[in-house]
Image (cartoon, rainbow, N blue to C red):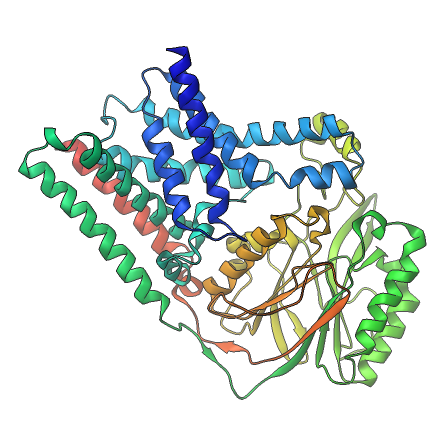
Length: 519
């Protein structure tokens, strides 16, 4: 029995691990279905302990393969010994694997009311419980909303649902489809001979439902929900300084960094309307860089160009000091004078990278990681868009591009572009930056706006309102990306109604669940 359970755990681990290939840069989206269907089929074990072990094994494989790049930032840039770095990575993966385990145990808890391998378990309860555990994973301790299954479907027909349902709705639809696949597989491959004609019609109906969902989603993918405003355009340059993470924050590097960004900007200051630098391009406090910023502002005004600069802002108020990860605009309608109002302050901070959750308990971990600027403050949830040369940019910094709800709260019909600045140098030459870019593509598709992504060392890119990469520059090169863009007008259903359609879909599943229970 123990050997049989070990084999099941190993298979579950493998099925969890293959899911990474459904995300960028691989984009083999059918593997996401194979992975999740495997989980659904494996978790119906004889005891709760067996269920927990099998589901945990799946989650460990899923997250170990998907976020192994965290090791790079811990080992190389946190200067942590190899063994300890591996240990921290495994602790993170083990924590994340708890969520699939909880999902499986919730399904088992209702086993008396919901038979294993049944329509109700696979197609109704499993999607509902998966959404619940993923919501908790994305919010607890500021959350880690990475490797959400919906992103794996960006290239699939289900990608057409992003402008309608958003990432949550796409993930819910994915789990429903996976439940149908699991149900049909079990009935046809394992239990077909025990089914009467009525049961077989049940299976045929499930297959038809899959066909309808995929056909409708594919059709939605052909619709352009927003239109290009051909009466307005801007020449925009995205600057990629390519400053190595290992030296970015050293005082000796600061002047070289400033010179690098100044030189790259000078190349386009006369021809570009807008120049955008990445997150924390200037690795110093804004108040310390007044003469440099004033000089850059004067240059921008003289050439009728706006320059967005990533920098750190320190604000002293009464008895407390607050540090913000900010993006400021120079070359504005008024000469630069600190503090300006045309700026964005990062709201959603990364645990241990920018702040320490439960600081009294977890501060020793933060001190081990030794990450600079890891005691930042959170900016307001609702902020005005950045305005550059008359264009309105809904802006987020780094990890925030993962949070469609945050963008939704700051988005309206007058938004011209989406803008995200980032520094993915933490993750080296790994799949992490590609996963990050994939989520940015989803935001462009959800809101029907061109998204500009300026990064320190890649992947700097321009993404169309259809979620396609129209232009990008190679990673690890000191260069710029210049393009001419028109803003978009109109609203996608998701931009107009937010998550309401997703909530309606959730409610429909709950109603079906209770109707089935009464019967």
